[in-house]
Length: 153
Image: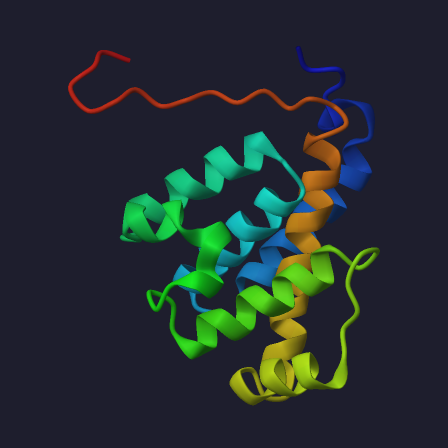
């Protein structure tokens, strides 16, 4: 059961977070990669609401379901490009700051794939999804599943 609707309890803060999300989505980060980043951060944060939403969004925008199923094991497969791998490694490090260290090699790898402003843009996308996760998890944002193909809504 959802504990609180933050958008009702603190609408001005919620609107500011939504504005951050909108700004992050207008960066040069391609939407397909953004879906992977949002889903991976949500997996790390155990945010079921955001995992469901970003899985659905990614599939709707053409992502292959098998890649999404393997996302948490991206290091063990060759299904992800070097750019995606750099983004996922950066996502994991930025999301799990308390348990990981962003060393010079990780920074070099990420900035090689995301030079200059692109790495700042990627980081802002990661910050935004982490903020949403940190609202959805403690307040038990409820997951609603869309109907399966062929099933009535």
